[in-house]
Image 1 (tube, helix red, strand yellow):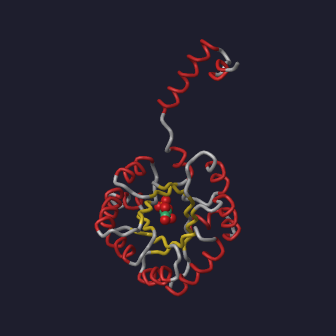
Image 2: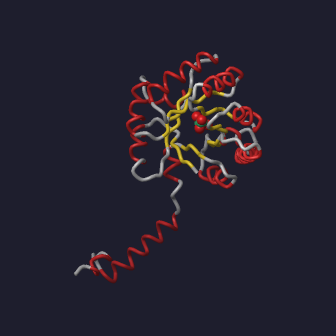
Image 3: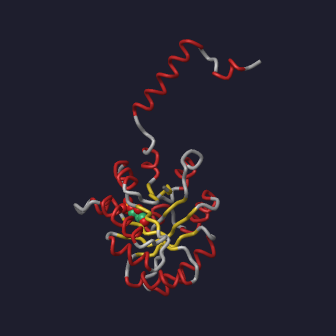
Length: 226
Ligand code: E4P
């Protein structure tokens, strides 16, 4: 399963990159607008941090021609591992087709139903991004929708991958992993929470305590030195 960061907070990304197995970053207009006054400067920073890993950024145009032109401009600037996020609208559908004909990478975003995902896959989308927490918040079941999308794409042998998005807690990430999502994108705080368990910390503390009681400051490899 691919793990992406759903943030443009370069400070937090830089903190996490050396430790977490991050495959890329996703942004949207909200995320970029919160980060700085200059989205190009933010994207420059993301490019440096990602060093060739995936970057996803969304179109701001309303019509398919505008979306396609923006996709070309951003792909040319960011590079071959850039994915243009195209919203699931009628204009978006036309834009997906144009982008794929041109060989551009496409993530179709704001997916809330399996039928939307199926249409995007039929047009050749590389990723579809269902919004798990936003589904949960309308008394739907985000993880079940993700599972249905995974199954439908498999039934028709589409190469499109499911990039589950919009998470507020670890349980939601676990639920979509259980139904076979191909990728998730999570914010920085949630990414850090993925490894947390109090018994993990306690177990490691106990090992350390027992070792030090017996051997003091010696490291295990000290006993192997000649
Ligand atoms: C992904 O494509 C979306 O940009 C994002 O995950 C939405 O997340 P939110 O519901 O936390 O805003």
